[in-house]
Length: 257
Image 1 (tube, rainbow, N blue to C red):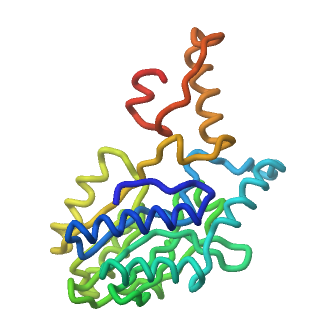
Image 2: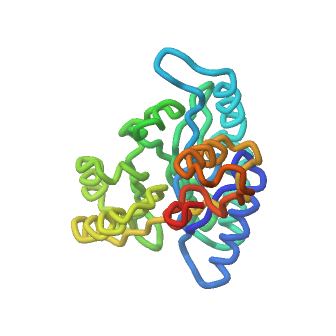
């Protein structure tokens, strides 16, 4: 599912998940894979007001809002996803932001067509600035789930660049290798092709497609992006500036929008 969350609105995001999964089921799909952090959101571009040795009050408020939109596992959100899986008789792999006390984890959940939670795992090593807001997972959750479709395993985003993690999934007999991500670079597709050949498995990957209308009006990453673009293009000062249709797309940057 190449789609986007409704950032900082978990209830609407779950509704969107239900709509997308229902459509996939109606088209005959047996498995739906949603991108990294689909439920809870991937806050691309936010810095949470952090510099070495300090945090801004606004950044703390951003984290508070992010924490409030994370989910408990198990909890009402997982029950909602389970109901969607049952209704569509669908296997679902979905990235979520999991709340455990004061810590957030980037997790991937696998549901069976009966709504059972078959696997739950946390991203072992968040990438770069993700470590500011996500805790570390551990290897105890690196399992594969036996299903009628085959043995389903999951590696989240840049975990796919960790050779020993991939090898662990291969050793456990993964047959359907799911790779939820937000990596939209041209290098991602050949990485997935390499894993398919290397692991002798089917690879299913889903990346984020985030549009401006799905972000809050005060979403800092968009506001900062507009400021940076105006600084790069001073001739735009004094002119009306359209809101970008999507956040951080190469086509927008190429047009200077």
